[in-house]
Length: 327
Image 1: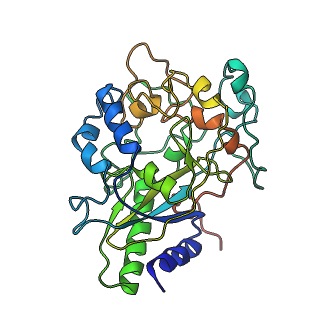
Image 2: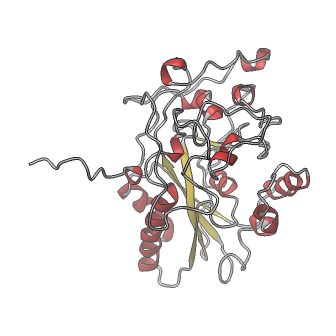
Image 3: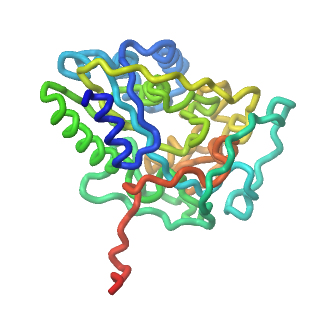
């Protein structure tokens, strides 16, 4: 069994619907776009991005993995949608968005048929900050001081911290790869390494990068988180997923702070999720938005997120120790 077969087998066993591999090298044009984005000051106070920009543009660098990476494994783990495109927003606890402007916004692409299942409704409890070092330096699940705790929490911030979920999964995958190939060297990534996760996800066939800068899969939408392994082995390329946004601009028009002022370009200074997931209040002049923690507005309106979506990965479930066990 070669390394790609190991990955496929692992994904099936762990019920991971999105998994792919790709050779690695300098990522272009994303690397150049990152440098331009930084020069324009759109990163705001996310200064660590500038310090590691050269590494992010070249995941094959030996500074990231001993001897240099030749391939990457990329996984996508679905999380619950608390709202999906096409539903009545006030009933889901979200305000009505203004009508989108222009004929382009009025003609979104045809979405895939909604998956069977039951959509979530109501407002979940605010999650507590994870214990045992499960947090991440750029990801704080406590509410910003003075924030309204009555609003919903963004889907990716519900349940168990996805960094911890990926940490466990990637450790097991790395062990499986080493058992099949004792000389393999890996480095995990999930927001915590200087790697352009989304650029690698696109190359690994997990979707295309939409106007909201999210990776969108034609069947699973964009409600999944990304993580993976850099590997010192050449891995096969995946078949590219053709972009299907067409002329749709729903995500750009719905953003409450106009953080998506250009296609695929996010102004982190205006993005509510950038502020609240670091436990900080948005600066004066920006609205609070409909979410207490994080923000999913640009995903809520995406036609590819219509319906309840794929079943969330089991790793996100949090055991409720207060619930009595069945006899």
